[in-house]
Amino acid sequence: MAKGGPGLAERVAAAQRVVVLTGAGVSAESGVPTFRGTGGLWRQYRAEDLATPEAFGRDPRLVWEWYDWRRQLIARCAPNAAHFAIVHLERQVPEFLLVTQNVDGLHRRAGSVKMVELHGNLWRARCSREGTIQDLPETPLAEIPPRCACGWLLRPDVVWFGEALPPPALERALLAASACDLFLVVGTSAVVHPAASLPVVAKEHGAPVIEVNLEPTPLTALAHESHHGKAGDLLPRLLGFSLAPDPQPPTPA
Ligand code: BJW
Figure 1: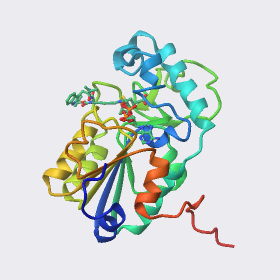
Figure 2: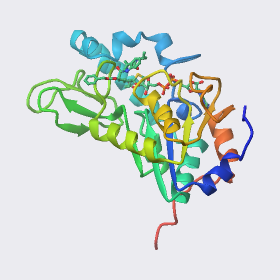
Figure 3: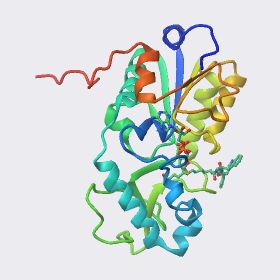
Figure 4: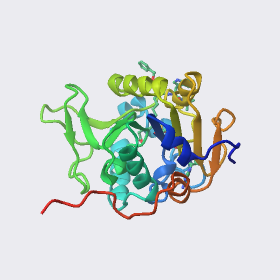
C-alpha cells in the first residue's frame, strides 16, 4: 500500500541517483522458483544441505546436481516485464545501479548494464584451489562434479551462507546505497544479509525506500511506499513505462 506523497514515476523524474535492489521475486514471472514461500526452492531442499560450503565439502555431487537442474530450468526462462522496466529505468536516470541478489543472469539478458551481482552467477564455475573462473554451458554438465584443468573440484561461482560477498560488489552497492536519492526494492524477502541492510543504509542517508513485492516483508515498515502485487505488472505501471517487449536500441544496419 502506498503511504501517500509523490508516485514512483514522479520520484524517478526528480531523482539523480537511483539504486534498485532485486531478489528472486523479480524472476518469478519468468518461471524461476523463488527460495522461500510457496513453491520456493528451500521448501523442497534444505538450504543447509545445498547452499553452504559444508554441504559442498560433504557431497559435491548432490550440490552440483541441484545447480545443474536449476541451470537447465533457467535456460528455458526469459526475462519478464519487470526486468525490462529496470532496463528502461537505467536508461532514464543519470546515475543508476542495479544490485541483484539473483544468480540467474536474467537482468543481463534483459539488457541491464550498470549492475552488481551480490551473490554471484550460476552460469560460472570457480576452481576451489586456484579461484579461476570459467563459464558453464547451457547444456547439462558432462561430468558431475566438474573438475578444473588443475585436477581440483570446480564449485558454482555463487555466494553460499557463511561466505563473504565479493568485496568489490558489496562496496559498490554500499556506496551507491549511501549516496542515492531513491532506493527501489523489488521481489526480495529481505531476510538475507548483508543485502537486506542496503535499504536501511539508504534510508539512514535520507533516501526514500520504495518496495514492490507480492506480500509484506520486514522492510515494509521502513519503506516510504510499499506496493503489493506482481513486479511484472506493477513495476512498469508505477514507473509509467509502456510494456515494450524489447528495450534494446535497433541494431545498426
Ligand atoms: C514476488 C513475486 C512477484 C515472489 N513479484 N515479488 C545479519 C543478521 C542476520 C544474519 C546475518 C547477518 N549477516 C550475515 C548473516 C548470515 C547470513 C544471513 O543473512 N542469514 C539469514 C538468512 C538469517 N548471511 C550470509 O551468510 C551472507 N554472508 C555473510 O554475511 O558473510 C559474512 C562474512 C564476512 C567475511 C568472511 C566470511 C563471512 C551470505 C548470504 C548468501 C546468500 N546465498 C543465497 C544462495 C545463492 C546461491 C544460489 O542461488 O544457490 O542467495 S541464499 C538465497 O537467499 C539466495 C538469494 O539471493 C537470497 C535472498 O533471497 P530472495 O532473493 O529474497 O528470495 P526469497 O525467495 O527469499 O524471496 C522472494 C520474494 O519475492 C518474496 O518476498 C516474495 O513475496 C516475492 N515475490 N513472486 C514481486 N511476481
